[in-house]
Length: 113
Length: 112
Image 1: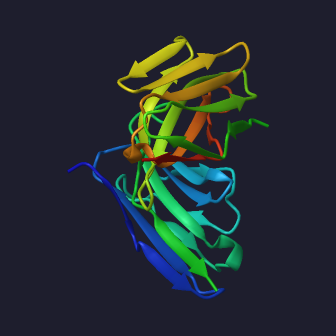
Image 2: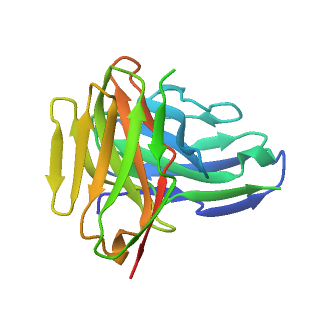
């Protein structure tokens, strides 16, 4: 089954404790991105990748890192999480880029205390 | 910079009525306009999209209209059903910036 997966689905952590949210897709998509969803603000892009080893900042990249060592995986790293990073995070992938269907993962609910 | 405004933020309709959600954008180079539906606790999923060379597109009970001159596009849902209850996001892609920008979302409630 074609899909995008994320882990963990739920995470409660404390300020400053490094964490990684994994994202994987099995559709051989080149384009992948991370979004955060906050009430009243919609979906905002954090980072994106157009291919292996090619990543760039989105609209809200501060406090986040990413890597793309393999085509299927695009982990999101929070090296020193802060309470303002409490949010719902979605990974997405697409075949032809941003003017194409975005396939979202199931989401990760992160709480930073 | 580029901006997408979505209205209303919440919308409540009776089952069987129509619902309309509108988005306005500022970047004249925008040429792709998708709509995503997010059911409670689920991921956003594409329900319909339109490109700038088309003024209207329909898929059963949903339709999207685009007015490039006024820089707005709308989602129309006819004969609404309780399963249409969800958050709907519009988005625009600009060929100038290469970015996909989402609106703030509209929570639609369809009352039986």
